[in-house]
Image (tube, rainbow, N blue to C red; front, side, top):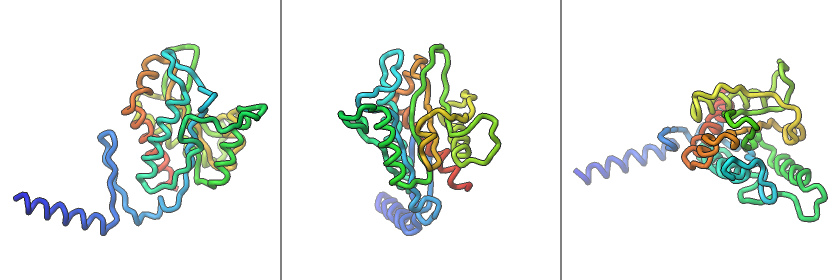
Length: 238
């Protein structure tokens, strides 16, 4: 029986490879895609883990550094998108700042370097990963931002991507989150990039429950998979 079972498994594997069908299992979710699907071929996506190096970003109630959570989720997102066949470019993959010691304004120099990487990659879209904070520690929930003014009804690729990712975060990360994708005109990266860009604030480090969740590798993976699903949903429907 074992021999027959092994032969059957090998036969199925050969058929799967021949058809170009691949699988990705993450956090109990089972994905299937076909390598011949043109929707993922040569599609470049930039992931920007916010802050890094000298710049910790927000600091949580229990001392969590935003830069570390940003990087952890971004690396998971890179894996998820790569598994679906997308070409992924990262602005950083370690705990570094993109400015030099000689830069007089390190923050601006860091942001300009990120934009330089984005422009060189010429991506379909850019996802900048961040964490939020607020004086009221009861505030929680992920939220996605795009460049634009509130109540602006003009078509926007960034807005469409943000809405798709926000919906996916609600479905996969936290069904109780009722936040909506929001327009923003103040974020430097949103203003200065020439490619569709969103900023995903994955949670509040000022909320003790959410800070704990964001430190959990399984929750980080769930968050990354939610963002990935939202991006793929947008690409597949446009």
